[in-house]
Amino acid sequence: MVYKREDGRAFDETRKVEAKVGIIKRADGSAMFSFGGSKAIAAVYGPRQLHPQHLQKPEKGLLRCYYDMLSFSVTERKKPGPSRRSSEISFVTTKSLEPVLQLDQFPNTVIDVYIMILQADASTRCAGINAASMALANAGLEMTELVTAVSMGKIGDAIVADLTKEEEDFSITKDGEEIKAATDIPMAFLSRSGKISLLQLDGKIKQEELKEAMAVAKKVCKKIEEIQKNAIKKINED
Ligand code: ADP
Image (cartoon, rainbow, N blue to C red; front, side, top):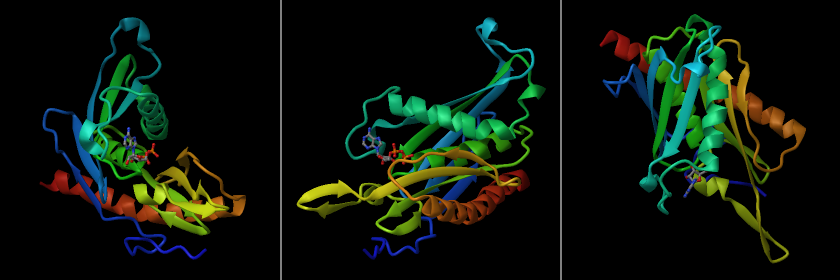
């Protein structure tokens, strides 16, 4: 099957990326990041004393990320409040960002990162990670490198970057039965070392194809990283 993208994008092309930092004045750091119709904002509070006190760790601070979607960010109203999905995304987001922070500099404290999806059209966890990474930098926290995420996919035989919801739901009819034919692979890279801090896989893919998807993701993330860096620099110049 020869796959052609509905919006005419090349396989390694993301939707339009927009990035801005310093959007929430009362937060210690904040940012907005969007991939086309998927738009995330992130606000950082801290480091501040962690309460209740028994949760404090004298050897290092705690990073807590909270991911959520606005009820009307999707076509069918999403029930407000936490869900299994938001808990999972909050957890993997925390794990994807932790490696770049020097948490041992902030004993007994917590850094809270609130990520809200204002509008969703797939790849929202990646948009959220990108926004959060910029917001942490905007908060003036020392970071060894930035974190940049993109969702890769396999549709039919094509390896594509930054899936839309329509692409994520791509299906084919076989023997009169409709079967899901898209694989979704969100990934995050650390900008300097190139290490991977997020890799999830929903669907099937061959080892060789996964290697190809990782190589493309790395290149795509380099471009996104430039946009993140420019947005961070811009606010520092303003
Ligand atoms: P990601 O947004 O990181 O790709 P998922 O694969 O779980 O995460 O979700 C894919 C897309 O499905 C979301 O971006 C959103 O467009 C849609 N979606 C997720 N949750 C809901 C929901 N509760 N109601 C309607 N659409 C949803």
